[in-house]
Image 1 (cartoon, helix red, strand yellow):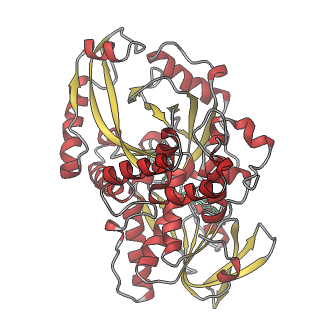
Image 2 (cartoon, helix red, strand yellow; image 1 turned 180 degrees about the vertical axis):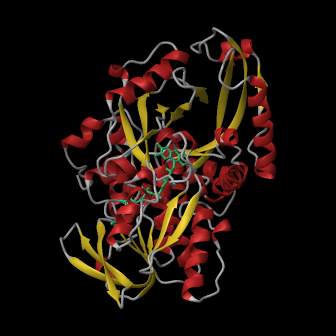
Image 3 (tube, helix red, strand yellow; image 1 turned 45 degrees about the vertical axis):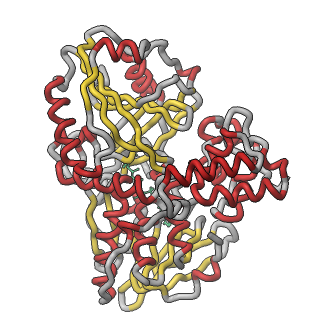
Length: 503
Ligand SMILES: Cc1cc2nc3c(=O)[nH]c(=O)nc-3n(C[C@H](O)[C@H](O)[C@H](O)COP(=O)(O)OP(=O)(O)OC[C@H]3O[C@@H](n4cnc5c(N)ncnc54)[C@H](O)[C@@H]3O)c2cc1C
């Protein structure tokens, strides 16, 4: 994937997508596979918005059953199955434990009924059936779990991903198939003829160059920035989004082998404690947010709320001093129901502006492929072409052609034979899939690149070179926050300097 800003001026494109989060990336891939000429730009790095700060769950969303969002859960469970097959290196099954407590907001019988429905909705794509867990079994497996009022529990399965990497991989797959993609190019205005949008005026933040990108259709897939871009297009009327803020804590690994779905003791909201890349995530908050999307921060209250939730259920307790950091972002939720933030709709809608701009608002990560299909259907209708989506079976860039377990074992063995440690081989295969061999080729040429990029993390120096050459990483945060997670786990590294891949 090469950054070629000149090619952006080589229009007109059939479609230009504004926003390289998972929604825009998904549409760029779908439209490209249908044979459209597509450009994709992001004002920052790909996945630098909400798509790198999610809870990392590819899930049906057990808790949405509380709001009887059955079509959404059904669709998400089916998308989960497709992702497990189309990106097996990046999306993995994850066991969840759901402990039941006497006097809890949701009684055990309702959880059990919900889990049965969840299993049924997943159909043949179910990962593994949920099952009850006895109190003694829970106490034995999780000695740190609160035992007071514990009556039993259940386990069920969902899936987990690295959200930023998955998004970048969708962009990469789109680029491999012909999309013209560039990060750090911001849409600042629109080109118009007779009041109708005919393209985008953009600025390349790397060179400062201004450019006009001509396109027959412009899609505004800017997540929390959707309303701002609509205003840029001259839309009148109120906002379409009602964003809510979500904060996660990042703690050192707590030895958990499963994720936990828990109810917060203060307000009964669902929150998760999740093992991820050897660390523990605690999240999330869900509060209304009124300042611009570029200015979103966690408050001391947000951190206290999450620590309180964790410490109610687990000992030893976590204190702020134990934390490695936190991350925060906005859910681009539809302004749908005048209710509490947690019950705002995870559905998405398309809006046509009088200027011809198409905007998408809402949605969730798990269902990005389906959203992209619906959005691209609308685009091809508008362009007057009849082409169907091919993404259901489209494997992402790093996905091997052969079954995942056979590929994984064979590739790990050959990387070990080439001199990599078992941990390094496992790490590369689970991050890059079939591209792991290309990363390892840097080490073949220069053995020094096998050294760890951080003494406490599995990332290798060779990855920085690969990310520079093939994943359009330009600035320190691109390497450290999205293509690896070193900056998230060791924020001091971000302040120091850019990684120096060439050294
Ligand atoms: C705390 C939290 C937890 C979540 N957890 C989950 C989960 O576990 N599972 C799940 O399925 N979903 C989850 N979600 C929802 C999911 O993460 C989002 O729905 C999804 O990432 C939104 O992607 P997007 O592409 O629409 O927006 P974004 O990822 O925000 O992308 C929008 C992009 O547009 C770019 N942009 C903005 N303005 C311009 C411009 N003028 N020109 C060019 N580019 C521009 C931005 O830089 C940004 O990269 C969670 C959300 C939050 C906030």
